[in-house]
Length: 467
Image (cartoon, rainbow, N blue to C red; front, side, top):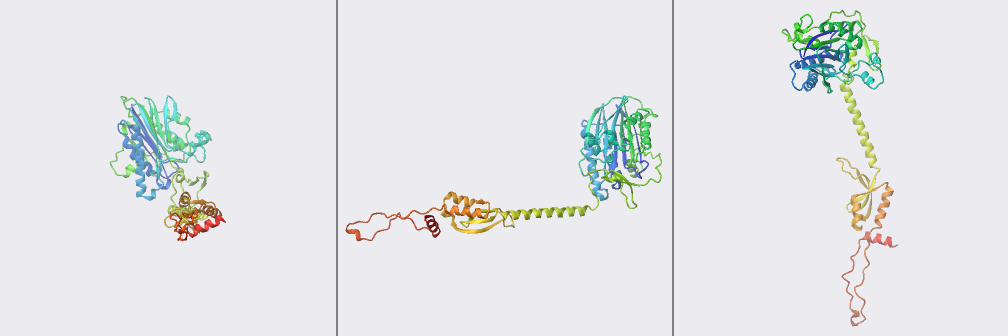
């Protein structure tokens, strides 16, 4: 099968510039809705289409991989543009793309532009909106009808922005001759019901259906840019009728901001069908409106209030104003928090006690036994005269490893218990009984087995224990 297609884009009756982009070719259909207002969403959508249109060739074996890869490449391209021109920070775009692969179509989708399939008079939505209200619908908190009028219905949660990974939905779908495909921005799907879309799509050629969808969307009150791509699936051997197929005379078609970008690159453009409809006159004296994103209510803009509703449309986009000041403030807050935590931790350590070894002498320490460069975490609170050598080996090892205490009084009790474990020397015993013989007057000789004299500390502790 192959595609008969048509693409239209209109700036609409309110906006001054068109931030939508669209593409239709023999193997590829794309709609991208730029987001960002003054951050130039038109740049994001046009660059995304420029990257994706490289897929308009006979597809290879891995169509889904190629489609997802192209969306990620557009993400990288936007990141490059923002790095080169900081005024573009905050720009992003939705994208819904379709690649025809024989009897199947591969679909890639990010954001709230939509893809539909009309078969035998029944319309099916192929894509799922990455929006706040869609998450409410999925959770059963609001209905589809309520979502259509919800104050936050335009708040999208996922886009191609060069900052966050786009995470596109990619899938394949079996198709058949006679199927009709619609890709559109929310300027159309946001104001036309499924019944209206079905009725308009069911009539005429892709060219006339695409034009009618744009026309009816603006008549229904769309305040956004409107971009639609309509394509029929036909047998490969079908003969094009120049009167019923725009593709027969125009070749690949580029519309919206992407078309403006192609024209700005100079004469000899590669796209013959580039066009922005612009047939409908904008509504005159339309008061500028600024949307309060938090409450979803609209208010007349003040004289110095130039906020475009598109500025707040993409939720994950970081704020642009006073970024350096906010980062500095955040760094100061983090440093203050770390400092407070460090002070609190140090004070806690100074309420801890343990009994340990101070130069082979038992002592009470205050703090914790830890090595922190540039910081003393413990000190001797009370020394003692008890030496490790005076203790049995098991107790000496415990002291060397440190014995935790719950308080200073508890540490003193531990030292006293250790003092009661001092090994006292055995009293000296004479080597033999005195002789009554003639040699009794001889001077007695000290026994070799007599114990050596004990240390003053040991003697004092042993004396106290005896008493």
